[in-house]
Length: 443
Image (cartoon, rainbow, N blue to C red):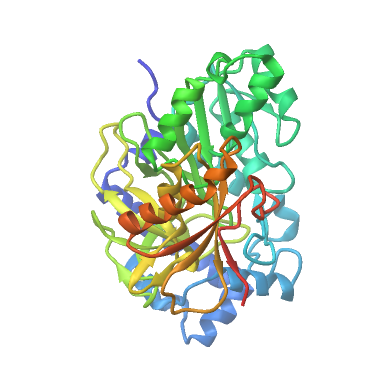
């Protein structure tokens, strides 16, 4: 009988058993944090909090939030790991850093036990998405200190799959390796296959679907929540595109994936993370129930090096289901609506870049899917200026018509006015990880 889950004891845990486990682990983690983390000792002392004030999960609401700014300031005070390092530095086995897309990057330190926990949760996600030991998978994320490179590589390896650590760059060599080695699975950002299409045709003289890829394990970018985007990947490549790699690099590399039963992200970090939702404006806790939306707040349950308590991720989630999935996994299911720090209010309408992205994806290949919101002044906004990359093969005389069509679709679907400026492919600023910078503030 096929093994359907990587860690069924955690992935299929009952709600009552999960609550008991979280209570037990949280109390031990809180004791550890109060005893070993200088940042939290000072933070909680200033808030008038002591360890005895936290006796259950519900008491977490008494504690102040932790933010990315807290972590940056901590590492300025005590480089390189910060004074939120709760283990001795000689116990640190590996160090990554964040991309620094929205500010100074942060060093993420992990002990041996932290790595075991990280890899187990990552293996749960990749297994849920369909990766198995018989697969050969080529891993195409940046290995240069970024969590998604080497740590995702080790997550993939733990499943028993054969991993080809290709990284980024030299795409012509990549498509030859895929063909020559009989690779059937690719791990990358969801935008990468679109770039590879022409490489396959030019380098090998074949259509992408003839290369042999059958499964795509994607993460690090939005887009896969749009069925038309997934269908375009499937039709072009003949592979199943899976949203297999959702995580928060400051907290845990990968802890959510879709399964083969429903295209909804499953929370898969039971025993490692305690997940909560809060109102992004007021900070008030929101019960984790079907249909609610809120900012994801995470607390480590057994982290040694850099434990985080009540960490605001800035990711706004919509809860799609809290009962067990048909696949047997018990974790809540969700979609990422957008980021709290990217949300814009336009004449009373909350606008997220993810929503704009979905509308733009409906107009590929006239557009290539990349865009940027350009802000010349602080809110309030009566409309938004968008720089949008047109498709490589369009008739340039049609640019204005395509722009007006997009403006009409945005008004009809998202209910706000957009002024679209068409720009050439690859002209919008990217981060060093290859992601387009979605919001540009010029003020």
